[in-house]
Amino acid sequence: MNKIILSAIVVVGGAVGYMAGGLIWAPPPRDKRIATLFEEVCVTQAFGEELATPPYRGLVRIKSFEGMRMWVDPVSASFLEMSDARCEIMTHDPNALSRRDAEKLAARIEPIVLDSFPDLAFDPDVTLGDGTVSRGWMRGEAFTNERRGVVFFAYPEMEDGAGSSLTLFYPDPPD
Image (cartoon, rainbow, N blue to C red; front, side):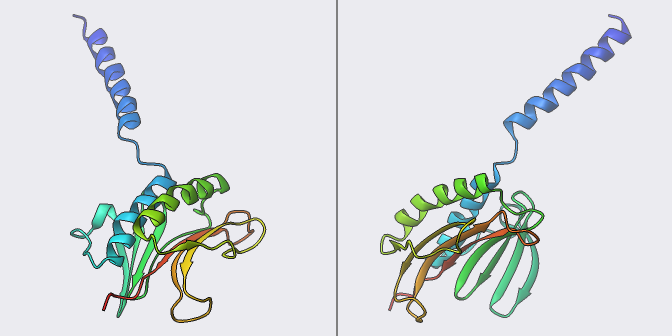
């Protein structure tokens, strides 16, 4: 076989394999990745389970203070912050969620919240106003120490400050 033909076959085959691999092993969509982190990190922490051996799912630790830890997730371009009282996944400009991704994330987290925290009720008053995607499942009176739950805010159209926040305020530990 001619060396030129063989070289062409190897180059074309390699390129096709690389593209097919990208389709098969492509990173998950941002909304799916953030929902997975929420379920596998925040929800498990709420029930007292420990994270898998760091770096969990490719998270990169960037800060650690007493009572607070923070990681960046390069896959979803988000930040994960955990403290004794809450677990929060945030995005910031220029990597804020689009409106479409925010709406998809809101739809993905609803069944997670309803399944994991059946005592939380949907709260239609949890909103940041027009132009935002907002959801909240809460229990306890607003502005009290008993207030617990999950809130999601995304403000994709906000100039110079678009972002999102998915926060789980941990329930009180069982007695």
